[in-house]
Amino acid sequence: MIFGTTYKVVYEHTRPLDAEIRARLDSIDVSLSMFNKSSVLARVNRNQAVAVDTFFAEVFSLAKRIAGETGGAFDPTVAPLVNAWGFGFKEGTLPDVEEVDSLRCLVGYEKVSLRGRAVEKADSCMMLDFGAIAKGYGVDAVAARLHAEGGENYMAEIGGDIVARGRNAGGKRWRIAVSRPVEGSGNVSAADHQTVLAVSDMALATSGNYRNFYYKDGKKYAHTINPVSGQPVQHDLLSASVFAPTCAEADAYATAFMVMGAEEARRFLASHPNLMAYLICAGTGDSMEIWHSPSLDSLIVR
Ligand code: AMP
Ligand code: MG
Image (spheres, rainbow, N blue to C red):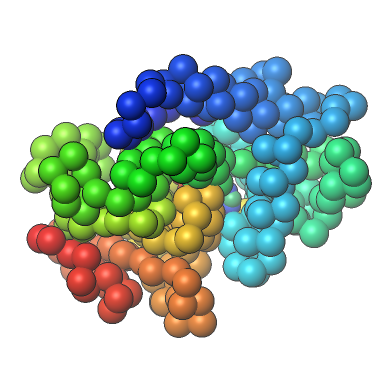
């Protein structure tokens, strides 16, 4: 387990690497997890004096870069709002307008920085949340380990974030399914698959509002928060799968796209040719509307 979720690694090395992979993921969990009360992240959030490790420093810089690029749609300082809406590590009830307004003042990636190994915050009540980037980063770390050991064919996955290199055991590109964004779908059978892609030498991650959500008074509240409005995201984009050079980037951009919505995400993609996406929107009734980057055409198996 890492970040409270499962992982899977398939590789061809003759020397077993499972113990090393597990140790590496444990160190990443101890650095970045918000589920682990003694993680570096948790200590930073409690304003304890702590020198951050390399994993933390790398994710912090990358998160700030992507926050800037996405105009704050992805923002690692969104934690106070995530907690208030009940998806963080604290129990939350629905916050009222005044509470959301006061918490919004604590959110803003430009108000946190790293000085040496110390995190500096403009307000001590600010908190970090790497939940939208850390899984992808963990996958990159596993892939880097396998690559360093001379591996050419492997697949690493944490909670749906994936790096696939080379070929699978059958000598083909890795078959990766994108789930149909249906509430409660378990992604266990082919019927739950919206599409299947043949993937090689790529990282991908999916964000969606169909697994982690709750209903209150007939209204749906999902786990992606718009850092600007302070509200849980509510629009017709049901899931965003992003293909990027690294899995940490795929993870962060997928979350950013959920905040932006399909139209803005497509505009963003038009000026970022290193990214590709598969977007699933709610259509009329129970129907769904798909848009994907034209360059994904050649990967779609069914
Ligand atoms: P993901 O599944 O990668 O989309 O990440 C969702 C998690 O990221 C949520 O459970 C929150 O902890 C956190 N989060 C929610 N909204 C945002 C946001 N706008 N920017 C960054 N992280 C967010
Ligand atoms: Mg993400």
